[in-house]
Length: 86
Image (cartoon, rainbow, N blue to C red; front, side):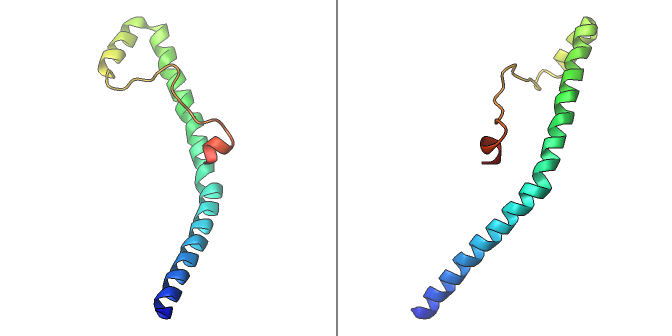
C-alpha cells in the first residue's frame, strides 16, 4: 500500500509542476500571439463593414453570401486582465 501511495503522490506532484510550467509558457508564448491576432481580426472586421457601407449593392451581395457568418453588435468579449487570463 505504501508503494501505491508514493506512486500516486509522485504523479500528483509531477502533474502540478508540469501544469505550472505549461501555464507560464502559455502566458509568455501563446497569449501575446492571440492578442496580436485579435488586433488584425478587429481591423479586418472593421474593413469588411466599411466596404459594405461604401457600396451598398456589393454589401448586400456580401450579406447574402456570408449569411451564416454573422457578428452581434454587442458580442461578449473578456475584459483585459484577470477575466482574460482566467
